[in-house]
Image (cartoon, rainbow, N blue to C red; front, side, top):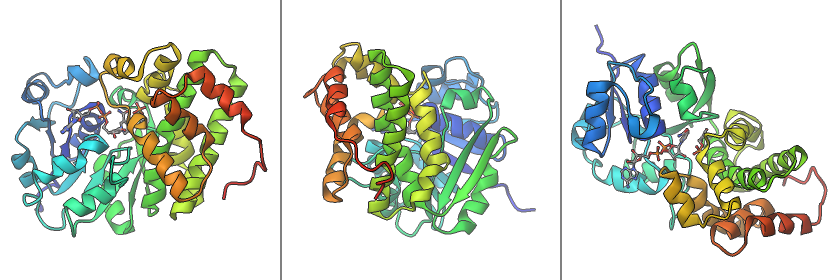
Length: 335
Ligand SMILES: NC(=O)C1=CN([C@@H]2O[C@H](COP(=O)(O)OP(=O)(O)OC[C@H]3O[C@@H](n4cnc5c(N)ncnc54)[C@H](O)[C@@H]3O)[C@@H](O)[C@H]2O)C=CC1
Ligand SMILES: O=C(CO)COP(=O)(O)O
């Protein structure tokens, strides 16, 4: 009888731990944590209190702080560290992953400096491996709590996604497939910036109409940049685009949205990130996205205001006044 597929997840933050928990219900799963105490807690108490409080994890989910052991065990590798840490993490194991092992990214940010998407960084660090991503409207805590959700495995070769789908799926976690890796990845990356704008709006006490405007025009910006970079614009109407945008902009648990709210309360970006204690990818991604917007000659007024606030050049109130100065054009002008 064939041995079951061994999934290995790198990164035991809220999302890496959650995805490892999903996989562990289907197949043997090993979670790598750089913090040995977190690995011990997952093995002995079946929880990750730093990131997921008292929520129970599957008792057969195993954790290790030995990254070489994790790499060696992988039939499928899932990269769950934040975007800025993907390269350094994979550089520790570049010779330790067996050939052809598929690699899935969970990260929703761009690498500072190179402007590369996580799947591009992975392809450089682990050449020859099929690379894709798992993304969608997936607030980690809700999924650990067993609330229904859906996600997308995106790989260029649909056969790879078809093989990976059942490893993560459950009756309450629907996993779709998509071959537009660029569009799916950009959706998850770009919505974080709009979520900071949505959080600022809530912190400033704007009305629901303004909130809706930020989401709708934010989606137009995401789609414009995505299409200019070569993505299928229809992808932005799906789970990884508008789906993830809605979840992140409305959920009180979203870290990016919480960053916006804290900035609107008058905190500096340093105070905000210290208070948060977790990653909010939109903060580092905003300046990189504005570089891309300039290169591709795409207008992104909401992202521009968010970048200015995060960089300390404008207050949230000034940013919202700035948005009112943008002359409205043709609403359908996505390209
Ligand atoms: N939390 C969520 O609901 C979701 C998060 N994501 C994405 O998943 C990625 C990871 O996010 P979370 O797990 O939420 O972050 P987190 O802040 O909860 O945890 C980050 C994890 O990465 C580790 N880490 C940080 N810097 C590192 C480094 N330099 N080297 C090695 N490990 C390092 C931390 O120790 C921690 O285990 C992000 O790109 C995020 O946008 C995607 C979907 C949902
Ligand atoms: O990507 C997410 C939900 O799909 C999580 O968003 P935050 O990183 O803002 O918490």
